[in-house]
Each structure stands twice: as C-alpha cells, then as structure tokens.
Image (cartoon, rainbow, N blue to C red):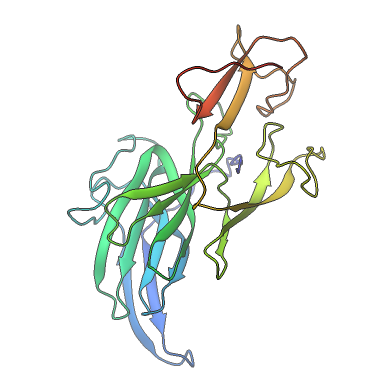
Length: 263
C-alpha cells in the first residue's frame, strides 16, 4: 500500500520506454526496441521467466500504445489531452527471448501506472499499480497501490491483493511478497506482526505476504468522517485516523451485502 507525492520540478521531457537484451557477458546487444506511442511512456519494472521471456510494466499517456488483441484491456482508459506525465494508464507487455511481442495490454483505468512486476513458474504475472487521487491539488498524490495477477495469456485478472508495493517477490511455495512505504494509519497490519502501529514521521516502510490460495477477506482502503468525508486526523496526508464513537465511512472491497462497523 504505497502513497507518494510528486514534486513539480519544472519542465520535464518524456519519450518512449525501451527494452534491450545483452548476452551473458554483457558484450553483445542481442535485441533492442522502443516501446511506446505518441505520448509519454516509461517502463518501471521488468521480470524474466524460465524461458527467457521478458515482462515489462510501466505507465503511458499514449492512446496508441502498442497493444495486442484478446488481452485484458487493449484500449486506452486514461484521460486524453492531459498535461504530459507518466500517469495515464498502466501497461504490461511480454516479449519472447528473441524480442517478439507475445501480448501487450493496458491495465487499470485513468490516472494509473504500473511500478513493479514479477512472474511465477506457471508464467502468471504479478503487477503492482498505483493511481493518482482524483481532484487532487498540486503536488499530485498517489492513492494506495494494489497488485493484480494476470493469467498466462494476459487476457484476465485471476487474483488481486490490496497489499501492493514498489518491490515484489515470490518464494518457492508461491507466496507473494510486497514492500514499499505508506503514509496512512489505515493499513493492513496483521495481529502479532513485528510492528502493528504507524511509527510516525513522514512515512513507514512495510512488508506484506499474501497467500492467494486462501479466500480473500474484507479490505479497507480508506476511513473518513461520515459527514465531511475528510480524514479525522489533521495532516497533509489522508491518514484516516478516527475518534472513538465517531460515525465513519469505509471504502474498500469484500465487505459483503451488509456491514456493521464499531469504532
């Protein structure tokens, strides 16, 4: 669950993402290609499977970013004619070891970018994406990230986790790990964890382990005042702290048809 804020540093220059492959000694370029469309594009993560195929994840503002038919999201869902940035729509592209595109898909919706990717032995792809908060004022803040698992053809999401992070890993048992930073008091800390409470300061690091073989429970993404819809804690960030007895509104998923919450 990652929240970050970008600082305006003046005019920026954007181009295309690229993918290059070197031989095992680094002395020969085996293939190299641009990856992008007519607007800003960049790659933030790369993973390699056992066959040598490469999986690229990133962000784009290009409605004409190269995608393939039959994938999860072949069409651009980001805002058009927005100021240049790398926050438009996330993407995932798979290349063979020879540099040919296997599949390429947008991922998510407006204001997103993918920041990390890993692949398991069955060639399912785990991708982390963050989304810009709507109606935010400068600097644009990013909402908590989440991780999605794509099937082997890139045509469907087979699982998802609210515990996204800019660093992803898988172990030999198939458990999924994510790490990053958070600035929210409403976090997914589990009972008896090493540190269950926010430590203060600008942000805390976190690590999470997710077992996708278990059924998903409710996930709380935000807690705000039920009347004002603002966080109950005076801060530059939406920390989500509330007072005992306060009426609150919960945002998340997996709550079911009816929810009773006692604060």
